[in-house]
Image 1 (spheres, protein in one colour):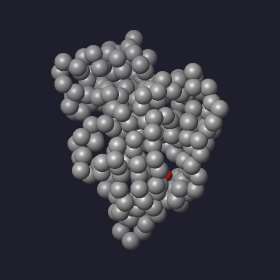
Image 2 (cartoon, rainbow, N blue to C red):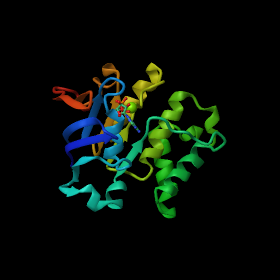
Image 3 (cartoon, rainbow, N blue to C red):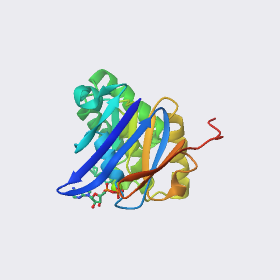
Length: 220
Ligand code: ADP
Ligand code: MG
């Protein structure tokens, strides 16, 4: 369980997060707000790639700053804009990021094969990334995010540039993953996530304005 407690963030003298408190358990959380409202800032802080100005985050009751690496290895983070090496194949790209994440050699092969199958890119594993559509690159990003088998997955604006079919595939995939994980995804378009999210978090000008559990949904 992940708990954000009164998170504030200032850039210089400008405060952009004004005290965000949210508890996350397993399931899919849609972080929704207009551009500039603070979604990426929250996600960067949750992923421990950006320091907060005040507040704290507890992972199963322990401060993440105390856990340090032991926290970061639980996290899979797909930032808003990711660049890939165009001449790497899908398989090589995932191996490369898995290696950087410290997945050991013995597990790497089987993890890479597993995530390639999960995102439905196994047949394309030897194709170069430069031949991929936007949706295929998105799925590659998800595969990379999952290769070290994180407990918490954070996707910043994952549905940008996806066509309806790819969007549906993405929803099915995260629905499957969410049974055992916490998944947080941001968007500025509510309709992108309202179907798939278990919880909706509305952010406006650095404040949490609404937290809602979506009830009565078919969880298969
Ligand atoms: P969102 O992801 O919802 O579009 P962001 O978290 O990117 O919003 O930005 C929230 C606010 O913080 C915006 O006003 C943005 O201009 C500001 N901001 C983001 N990053 C920086 C930075 N590195 N330096 C200064 N201001 C920033
Ligand atoms: Mg953003």
